[in-house]
Image 1 (cartoon, rainbow, N blue to C red):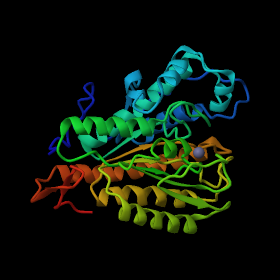
Image 2: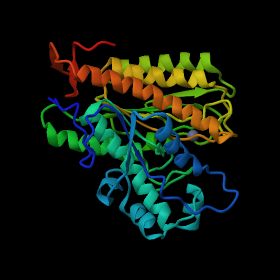
Image 3: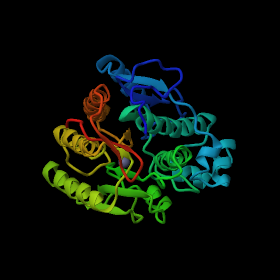
Image 4: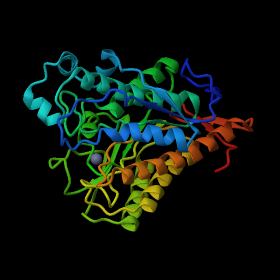
Amino acid sequence: MNTGWQQCENQRCSCPGLSVHAYYADQFVLPLPSGHRFPMAKYRRLRERLATELPQVRMLEALPASAGELALVHTPDYIAAVGDGTLSPAAQREIGFPWSPAMAERARRSVGATLQACREAMTGGGVSANLAGGTHHAYADRGGGFCVFNDAAVAARLMQAEHSRRDRTSGPLQVAIIDLDVHQGNGTARIFARDASVFTLSMHGAKNFPFRKEPSDLDVDLPDACGDSAYLEALDHALDELERRFTPGLVIYLAGADPHEGDRLGRLKLSFDGLEARDRRVMDWAWQRRMPLAFAMAGGYGVDMETTLQVQMHTYRTAVEYQQRWQAMASRPPTATAVTATGAPHWQNAGA
Ligand SMILES: [Zn+2]
Protein backbone atom coordinates (compact mmCIF):
# COMPACT_ATOMS: atom_id res chain seq x y z
CA MET A 1 0.00 0.00 0.00
CA ASN A 2 1.18 3.47 -0.77
CA THR A 3 1.98 5.39 2.38
CA GLY A 4 4.09 8.05 0.72
CA TRP A 5 1.50 10.74 0.09
CA GLN A 6 3.78 13.48 1.33
CA GLN A 7 6.72 12.48 -0.79
CA CYS A 8 7.32 14.44 -3.98
CA GLU A 9 8.21 12.03 -6.78
CA ASN A 10 10.40 14.58 -8.53
CA GLN A 11 13.97 14.04 -7.42
CA ARG A 12 14.81 17.72 -7.86
CA CYS A 13 11.94 18.82 -5.67
CA SER A 14 12.26 18.87 -1.90
CA CYS A 15 8.81 20.26 -1.17
CA PRO A 16 6.74 18.42 1.43
CA GLY A 17 3.92 17.76 -1.02
CA LEU A 18 1.79 20.68 0.10
CA SER A 19 1.27 22.02 -3.39
CA VAL A 20 -0.26 21.08 -6.72
CA HIS A 21 2.67 20.01 -8.88
CA ALA A 22 2.31 21.36 -12.40
CA TYR A 23 4.65 20.58 -15.29
CA TYR A 24 5.36 22.98 -18.14
CA ALA A 25 7.15 23.04 -21.48
CA ASP A 26 6.25 26.50 -22.78
CA GLN A 27 9.89 27.48 -23.26
CA PHE A 28 9.80 25.40 -26.45
CA VAL A 29 8.03 27.86 -28.71
CA LEU A 30 7.02 26.76 -32.18
CA PRO A 31 8.00 29.06 -35.01
CA LEU A 32 4.56 29.68 -36.54
CA PRO A 33 3.70 31.79 -39.58
CA SER A 34 2.30 35.23 -38.71
CA GLY A 35 -1.48 35.19 -38.36
CA HIS A 36 -1.52 31.50 -37.31
CA ARG A 37 -4.55 30.97 -35.09
CA PHE A 38 -2.89 28.77 -32.47
CA PRO A 39 -2.54 30.85 -29.26
CA MET A 40 1.04 29.90 -28.41
CA ALA A 41 1.49 32.77 -25.94
CA LYS A 42 -1.22 31.55 -23.58
CA TYR A 43 1.02 28.81 -22.15
CA ARG A 44 3.68 31.25 -20.98
CA ARG A 45 0.98 33.64 -19.71
CA LEU A 46 -0.63 30.86 -17.66
CA ARG A 47 2.70 30.01 -16.05
CA GLU A 48 3.33 33.70 -15.27
CA ARG A 49 -0.11 34.16 -13.76
CA LEU A 50 0.17 31.02 -11.65
CA ALA A 51 3.59 32.14 -10.40
CA THR A 52 2.26 35.50 -9.23
CA GLU A 53 -1.30 34.67 -8.16
CA LEU A 54 -1.27 31.08 -6.90
CA PRO A 55 1.88 30.14 -4.98
CA GLN A 56 0.30 26.84 -3.93
CA VAL A 57 1.04 25.61 -7.46
CA ARG A 58 4.61 24.37 -7.72
CA MET A 59 5.86 24.49 -11.29
CA LEU A 60 8.44 22.09 -12.65
CA GLU A 61 9.98 21.82 -16.10
CA ALA A 62 8.69 18.75 -17.92
CA LEU A 63 11.09 16.08 -19.08
CA PRO A 64 10.60 14.76 -22.62
CA ALA A 65 8.79 11.46 -23.09
CA SER A 66 11.17 8.84 -24.50
CA ALA A 67 10.62 7.02 -27.79
CA GLY A 68 9.93 3.88 -25.78
CA GLU A 69 7.21 5.63 -23.76
CA LEU A 70 5.63 7.09 -26.90
CA ALA A 71 5.68 3.60 -28.43
CA LEU A 72 3.21 2.41 -25.80
CA VAL A 73 0.64 4.15 -28.04
CA HIS A 74 2.25 5.46 -31.23
CA THR A 75 3.65 3.54 -34.20
CA PRO A 76 7.45 3.47 -34.65
CA ASP A 77 7.18 5.04 -38.12
CA TYR A 78 5.19 8.01 -36.84
CA ILE A 79 7.49 8.57 -33.83
CA ALA A 80 10.50 8.50 -36.18
CA ALA A 81 8.88 10.89 -38.69
CA VAL A 82 8.15 13.45 -35.94
CA GLY A 83 11.65 13.03 -34.53
CA ASP A 84 13.63 13.39 -37.73
CA GLY A 85 11.42 15.83 -39.60
CA THR A 86 10.18 13.52 -42.35
CA LEU A 87 6.45 14.11 -41.83
CA SER A 88 4.80 14.63 -45.20
CA PRO A 89 3.40 18.08 -46.01
CA ALA A 90 -0.10 16.57 -45.78
CA ALA A 91 0.65 15.14 -42.32
CA GLN A 92 1.92 18.55 -41.17
CA ARG A 93 -1.20 20.25 -42.54
CA GLU A 94 -3.36 17.74 -40.67
CA ILE A 95 -1.53 18.56 -37.43
CA GLY A 96 -1.74 22.29 -38.15
CA PHE A 97 1.91 23.07 -37.34
CA PRO A 98 4.88 23.11 -39.69
CA TRP A 99 7.57 20.70 -38.53
CA SER A 100 10.59 22.18 -36.73
CA PRO A 101 13.00 20.81 -34.13
CA ALA A 102 11.12 22.86 -31.51
CA MET A 103 7.82 21.34 -32.61
CA ALA A 104 9.19 17.82 -32.07
CA GLU A 105 10.76 18.70 -28.73
CA ARG A 106 7.67 20.50 -27.45
CA ALA A 107 5.49 17.53 -28.42
CA ARG A 108 7.69 15.12 -26.45
CA ARG A 109 7.79 17.43 -23.42
CA SER A 110 4.06 17.96 -23.48
CA VAL A 111 3.58 14.20 -23.20
CA GLY A 112 6.28 14.11 -20.52
CA ALA A 113 4.39 16.72 -18.51
CA THR A 114 1.27 14.57 -18.40
CA LEU A 115 3.32 11.46 -17.57
CA GLN A 116 4.93 13.25 -14.64
CA ALA A 117 1.62 14.72 -13.48
CA CYS A 118 0.02 11.27 -13.48
CA ARG A 119 2.95 9.73 -11.62
CA GLU A 120 2.88 12.51 -9.07
CA ALA A 121 -0.87 12.13 -8.56
CA MET A 122 -0.51 8.35 -8.20
CA THR A 123 2.47 8.30 -5.86
CA GLY A 124 2.80 11.74 -4.37
CA GLY A 125 -0.58 12.95 -3.53
CA GLY A 126 -3.87 13.46 -5.20
CA VAL A 127 -4.05 16.23 -7.82
CA SER A 128 -1.36 17.24 -10.32
CA ALA A 129 -1.31 19.04 -13.65
CA ASN A 130 0.20 19.69 -17.04
CA LEU A 131 0.16 23.38 -18.02
CA ALA A 132 -0.45 22.25 -21.61
CA GLY A 133 -1.37 18.82 -23.00
CA GLY A 134 -4.76 17.30 -23.64
CA THR A 135 -3.76 16.53 -27.24
CA HIS A 136 -6.66 14.22 -27.84
CA HIS A 137 -6.90 14.43 -31.65
CA ALA A 138 -3.66 12.46 -32.10
CA TYR A 139 -4.07 8.86 -33.28
CA ALA A 140 -1.50 6.06 -32.99
CA ASP A 141 -0.10 6.75 -36.45
CA ARG A 142 -0.89 10.41 -37.12
CA GLY A 143 -1.58 13.78 -35.54
CA GLY A 144 -4.36 16.28 -36.12
CA GLY A 145 -6.01 19.45 -34.83
CA PHE A 146 -2.87 20.93 -33.17
CA CYS A 147 -2.08 17.54 -31.58
CA VAL A 148 1.15 15.65 -32.34
CA PHE A 149 1.21 12.86 -29.73
CA ASN A 150 -1.66 11.78 -27.47
CA ASP A 151 -0.39 12.63 -23.99
CA ALA A 152 -3.30 11.18 -22.01
CA ALA A 153 -3.13 7.90 -23.91
CA VAL A 154 0.62 7.49 -23.41
CA ALA A 155 0.25 8.42 -19.73
CA ALA A 156 -2.57 5.92 -19.18
CA ARG A 157 -0.52 3.09 -20.71
CA LEU A 158 2.68 4.01 -18.84
CA MET A 159 0.87 4.28 -15.50
CA GLN A 160 -0.62 0.84 -16.16
CA ALA A 161 2.84 -0.58 -16.88
CA GLU A 162 4.33 1.00 -13.75
CA HIS A 163 1.39 -0.19 -11.66
CA SER A 164 1.76 -3.77 -12.84
CA ARG A 165 5.48 -3.68 -12.05
CA ARG A 166 4.66 -2.54 -8.49
CA ASP A 167 1.76 -4.90 -7.99
CA ARG A 168 1.46 -8.09 -10.00
CA THR A 169 -1.58 -9.39 -8.16
CA SER A 170 -4.38 -6.84 -8.45
CA GLY A 171 -4.91 -6.76 -12.23
CA PRO A 172 -4.42 -3.84 -14.59
CA LEU A 173 -4.77 -0.28 -13.36
CA GLN A 174 -8.12 1.05 -14.53
CA VAL A 175 -7.88 4.56 -15.99
CA ALA A 176 -10.76 6.93 -16.76
CA ILE A 177 -10.09 9.72 -19.25
CA ILE A 178 -12.70 12.43 -18.69
CA ASP A 179 -12.45 14.71 -21.71
CA LEU A 180 -14.43 17.94 -21.31
CA ASP A 181 -12.69 19.87 -24.06
CA VAL A 182 -15.40 21.13 -26.42
CA HIS A 183 -14.01 19.03 -29.26
CA GLN A 184 -14.46 15.26 -29.30
CA GLY A 185 -11.50 13.15 -28.17
CA ASN A 186 -11.43 11.18 -31.41
CA GLY A 187 -7.81 10.00 -31.23
CA THR A 188 -8.18 8.84 -27.64
CA ALA A 189 -11.44 7.03 -28.41
CA ARG A 190 -9.85 5.14 -31.31
CA ILE A 191 -6.69 4.23 -29.39
CA PHE A 192 -8.68 2.62 -26.56
CA ALA A 193 -11.58 1.29 -28.64
CA ARG A 194 -10.71 -2.31 -27.79
CA ASP A 195 -9.16 -1.74 -24.37
CA ALA A 196 -11.53 -2.40 -21.47
CA SER A 197 -9.00 -1.14 -18.90
CA VAL A 198 -9.33 2.49 -20.06
CA PHE A 199 -12.72 4.24 -20.03
CA THR A 200 -13.06 7.16 -22.44
CA LEU A 201 -15.72 9.78 -21.69
CA SER A 202 -16.06 12.73 -24.06
CA MET A 203 -18.54 15.63 -23.73
CA HIS A 204 -18.36 17.87 -26.78
CA GLY A 205 -20.16 20.04 -29.29
CA ALA A 206 -22.10 17.76 -31.66
CA LYS A 207 -21.53 20.06 -34.64
CA ASN A 208 -17.94 20.98 -33.85
CA PHE A 209 -14.59 19.57 -35.03
CA PRO A 210 -13.81 16.71 -35.56
CA PHE A 211 -16.63 16.20 -38.03
CA ARG A 212 -16.00 12.46 -38.19
CA LYS A 213 -16.16 11.36 -34.58
CA GLU A 214 -14.95 8.07 -33.12
CA PRO A 215 -17.06 6.13 -30.61
CA SER A 216 -15.83 6.64 -27.03
CA ASP A 217 -17.02 4.41 -24.19
CA LEU A 218 -19.39 7.28 -23.39
CA ASP A 219 -20.06 10.23 -25.72
CA VAL A 220 -22.23 13.18 -24.79
CA ASP A 221 -23.11 15.32 -27.81
CA LEU A 222 -24.09 18.88 -26.91
CA PRO A 223 -26.09 21.27 -29.09
CA ASP A 224 -24.70 24.64 -30.17
CA ALA A 225 -25.22 27.40 -27.58
CA CYS A 226 -25.57 24.90 -24.71
CA GLY A 227 -25.53 26.86 -21.43
CA ASP A 228 -24.50 26.17 -17.84
CA SER A 229 -27.51 24.32 -16.47
CA ALA A 230 -27.98 21.93 -19.40
CA TYR A 231 -24.24 21.26 -19.49
CA LEU A 232 -23.94 20.54 -15.78
CA GLU A 233 -26.99 18.31 -15.82
CA ALA A 234 -25.47 16.31 -18.71
CA LEU A 235 -22.19 16.08 -16.81
CA ASP A 236 -23.91 14.75 -13.69
CA HIS A 237 -25.59 12.03 -15.76
CA ALA A 238 -22.30 11.18 -17.47
CA LEU A 239 -20.43 10.84 -14.18
CA ASP A 240 -23.24 8.66 -12.81
CA GLU A 241 -22.98 6.40 -15.83
CA LEU A 242 -19.20 6.28 -15.62
CA GLU A 243 -19.54 5.15 -12.01
CA ARG A 244 -22.03 2.43 -12.95
CA ARG A 245 -19.74 1.01 -15.60
CA PHE A 246 -16.18 1.50 -14.32
CA THR A 247 -14.01 1.86 -11.20
CA PRO A 248 -10.88 3.81 -12.02
CA GLY A 249 -7.67 3.86 -10.03
CA LEU A 250 -6.58 7.02 -11.87
CA VAL A 251 -8.53 9.86 -13.50
CA ILE A 252 -7.01 11.90 -16.33
CA TYR A 253 -9.09 15.05 -16.84
CA LEU A 254 -8.95 17.23 -19.96
CA ALA A 255 -10.13 20.59 -18.62
CA GLY A 256 -10.55 22.40 -21.93
CA ALA A 257 -11.43 26.09 -21.56
CA ASP A 258 -13.08 26.14 -24.99
CA PRO A 259 -16.71 25.52 -23.89
CA HIS A 260 -16.61 29.14 -22.61
CA GLU A 261 -19.00 31.61 -24.25
CA GLY A 262 -16.07 33.85 -25.21
CA ASP A 263 -14.28 31.14 -27.19
CA ARG A 264 -13.74 31.60 -30.94
CA LEU A 265 -14.12 27.90 -31.73
CA GLY A 266 -16.30 26.48 -28.98
CA ARG A 267 -19.91 27.26 -30.08
CA LEU A 268 -21.16 26.66 -26.51
CA LYS A 269 -22.25 29.28 -23.98
CA LEU A 270 -20.75 28.33 -20.63
CA SER A 271 -19.99 31.15 -18.20
CA PHE A 272 -16.97 31.42 -15.90
CA ASP A 273 -19.17 30.16 -13.05
CA GLY A 274 -20.43 27.26 -15.16
CA LEU A 275 -16.91 26.14 -15.99
CA GLU A 276 -15.80 26.46 -12.40
CA ALA A 277 -18.76 24.28 -11.37
CA ARG A 278 -17.75 21.79 -14.08
CA ASP A 279 -14.20 21.51 -12.73
CA ARG A 280 -15.51 21.18 -9.20
CA ARG A 281 -17.87 18.37 -10.16
CA VAL A 282 -15.07 16.35 -11.76
CA MET A 283 -12.53 16.97 -9.01
CA ASP A 284 -15.10 16.30 -6.31
CA TRP A 285 -16.20 13.11 -8.03
CA ALA A 286 -12.60 11.86 -7.98
CA TRP A 287 -11.95 13.08 -4.43
CA GLN A 288 -15.09 11.46 -3.00
CA ARG A 289 -13.81 8.14 -4.36
CA ARG A 290 -10.19 8.87 -3.37
CA MET A 291 -9.03 8.56 -6.94
CA PRO A 292 -5.85 10.41 -7.89
CA LEU A 293 -6.44 12.91 -10.66
CA ALA A 294 -4.09 14.48 -13.20
CA PHE A 295 -5.38 17.22 -15.47
CA ALA A 296 -4.25 18.83 -18.69
CA MET A 297 -5.43 22.14 -20.09
CA ALA A 298 -6.45 21.02 -23.63
CA GLY A 299 -8.06 23.71 -25.82
CA GLY A 300 -8.92 27.35 -25.24
CA TYR A 301 -9.17 29.93 -28.01
CA GLY A 302 -10.72 32.98 -26.39
CA VAL A 303 -11.52 35.98 -28.57
CA ASP A 304 -9.69 37.69 -25.74
CA MET A 305 -6.91 35.34 -24.56
CA GLU A 306 -7.38 36.57 -20.99
CA THR A 307 -10.83 34.93 -20.82
CA THR A 308 -9.19 31.55 -21.56
CA LEU A 309 -6.61 32.23 -18.86
CA GLN A 310 -9.34 33.21 -16.42
CA VAL A 311 -11.09 29.87 -16.94
CA GLN A 312 -7.77 28.05 -16.45
CA MET A 313 -6.94 30.01 -13.29
CA HIS A 314 -10.29 28.92 -11.83
CA THR A 315 -9.36 25.32 -12.66
CA TYR A 316 -6.09 25.66 -10.73
CA ARG A 317 -7.80 27.32 -7.74
CA THR A 318 -10.20 24.40 -7.56
CA ALA A 319 -7.30 21.95 -7.90
CA VAL A 320 -5.47 23.61 -4.99
CA GLU A 321 -8.57 23.24 -2.85
CA TYR A 322 -8.81 19.51 -3.55
CA GLN A 323 -5.07 18.98 -3.19
CA GLN A 324 -5.33 20.53 0.28
CA ARG A 325 -8.00 17.97 1.15
CA TRP A 326 -5.66 15.17 0.09
CA GLN A 327 -2.92 16.67 2.22
CA ALA A 328 -5.18 17.09 5.24
CA MET A 329 -6.11 13.44 4.90
CA ALA A 330 -2.45 12.40 4.61
CA SER A 331 -1.52 14.31 7.76
CA ARG A 332 -4.01 12.30 9.85
CA PRO A 333 -3.28 8.69 10.69
CA PRO A 334 -5.96 6.51 9.10
CA THR A 335 -8.26 4.63 11.47
CA ALA A 336 -8.94 1.95 8.93
CA THR A 337 -7.95 1.32 5.36
CA ALA A 338 -8.94 -1.13 2.73
CA VAL A 339 -7.60 -1.84 -0.70
CA THR A 340 -9.97 -1.42 -3.61
CA ALA A 341 -10.23 -3.81 -6.52
CA THR A 342 -7.94 -1.52 -8.49
CA GLY A 343 -5.22 -1.78 -5.89
CA ALA A 344 -5.55 1.90 -5.00
CA PRO A 345 -5.63 2.66 -1.27
CA HIS A 346 -9.10 3.56 -0.07
CA TRP A 347 -9.10 5.68 3.07
CA GLN A 348 -12.10 5.20 5.26
CA ASN A 349 -11.60 8.04 7.68
CA ALA A 350 -11.22 11.00 5.35
CA GLY A 351 -13.66 13.85 5.43
CA ALA A 352 -15.21 15.27 2.30
ZN1 LIG B 1 -10.80 21.85 -28.05
